[in-house]
Length: 180
Ligand SMILES: [Zn+2]
Image (cartoon, rainbow, N blue to C red; front, side):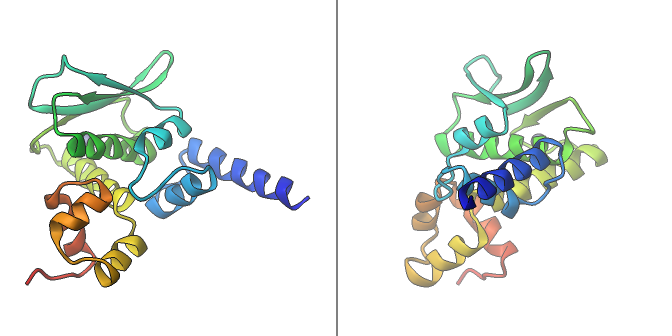
């Protein structure tokens, strides 16, 4: 009985996610855990698959594009620039997942450059997607635990979470850590 109830619960959460009613990283991470998806380092591919977003690693994207997310006739598709560093690709996937979770009712296509463009609405969504991606890839509790108990070295933290040192610095600042 208990197991059936838990599954129902899980399905309900997944349904909420698909309806676009989940807009915080902690809920997505819980959903991932409930589905046996590793969260540290985050298995971004399995999470995208759980959300029914198809990933295509492309070598046809120009080098200033990190990736894109598009609604197609067969569902949502995320294209990632295969020529970029693996940690960048992971961040791109998390960033596109953020667009999917937060913005898919506002736009049906997102194109992400390696730099910020200067349109207000785009900028707001880009900032939100970056912040959300950081929270997904570096869950607060795990991040604090690692710094307190394992290492405070930026490169070690970056390796542990499968992100760039820059992403670690940004996340650390968000969580109130100061570099010494
Ligand atoms: Zn974006």
